[in-house]
Amino acid sequence: MKKAILLVLFVFSLSLFAQEKFIIYTYHNHSPFINSQNSGLSYDVVRYLNTQAKGKYLFELKVIPRSRLNYILKPWINKDCLKIRKCDANWMVLWVNQKWGFGQDSLSNFSWTALLQDSNVIISSSKADFYYTKPEDLIGKKLAGMAGHRYLGIDDLVDSGKIKRINGNTEVENLKVVLSKRVDATLLPKSTFEYYQKTNTEFKKLYASDVSHQDYMRNIMTVPQNKELIAYFNSLDLSEIFK
Image 1 (cartoon, helix red, strand yellow):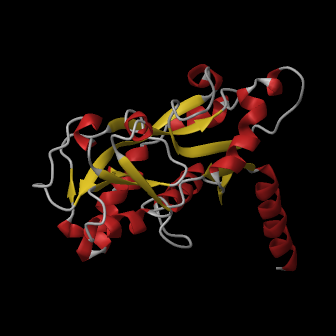
Image 2 (spheres, rainbow, N blue to C red; image 1 turned 60 degrees about the vertical axis):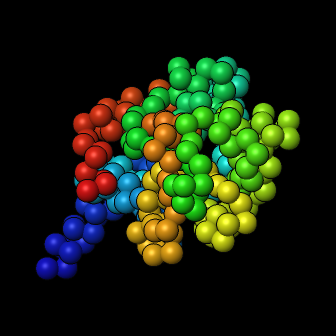
């Protein structure tokens, strides 16, 4: 009996040793991606990938600021990892798009696996306030933005004084400012706004524009060298994560 137990423990230790570990980075530390400890879509992705891997891979989530991610990815973006240094390739990034500051050659420099179709929408206190179809519809309005975020087509109008922008530190803070009518509108990912409407009855009073400010795909990003990992992603039905 003792020998059998030792054999099981030995086989188990070998299986752990054989696992290839990947760090999953995300800087999206707000709902629905991170709701609380071990809760949110990012954790759902990790659990799904680990379950489907059946011991071949071990995925571990790390939530870090975008500035830290930029530092980690800098040698990959500059292509130093292919020329003058050896870099750890066992990583991936969740919820990102190739247009979001990952270098001019981001589409070919990295591998992209589609994960979630999303959009940015304009949130106002009522549909009667104004009808949004384009950034110019915000002229003369007061907009609550997220500190450190840039908004295509809107920032130029802010810089020219045509839109007044104030910055908040959280999405909930900005929604409350809209609710109190201290600003005319804010801009949020549709996925985030829908989550907050489900979890906070107050926010059901707010209105999301029918016309989005931007539409985009949120992807899993890694490096093309991870061919087996990418093939693993392609073998999965990632839509199961959101059911």
